[in-house]
View 1 (cartoon, protein in one colour):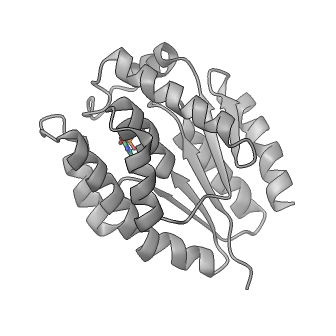
View 2: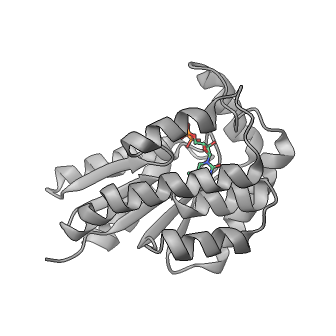
Length: 207
Ligand code: TYD
């Protein structure tokens, strides 16, 4: 059986990637494709417990510990869910993956990308077939987060502007360095325009 395609969705908070992921999943299902839509952190039972601690605004998480917990979540997710789905020929759409740790822990927290890459080589070697980067100015994205309100502001959302700027810059550098797998989409545009571009790429990938 042919392995399923692995698509990841990346960007800073409030970039709209989750909305676009859901639309992409619906688009594929409507064409009769088997799809799994999942996320990190929190794609497994263990991951949900890790997610709770990682996002809790009252939790004190040291930067290195944060990276290791993100990678622990990812390893469990990869082995328990992503690899079996891909092997069964299912397309896997994942909200955040290795590039989130490169951008947030590597650049945002300043741990450097080398240590992040090393952990991924050892524990999460699966590389996405396609990564969509939903890119927009930090101010635009954070205004959306503030407007969303809801369950409150999590541990990452409350970070200072400079943190989010480092994350965005790292994502953009990464996308430029991997033009074959990355597609950078202007996430400041209205959701329908963003999806129209995404859809073109899905057509190319899934024919
Ligand atoms: P989530 O509520 O899923 O945010 P979003 O809707 O923006 O994706 O929270 C995930 C948070 O965890 C997000 O702020 C980014 C952070 N994160 C990392 O710092 N490193 C990682 O490797 C991953 C997967 C997420």
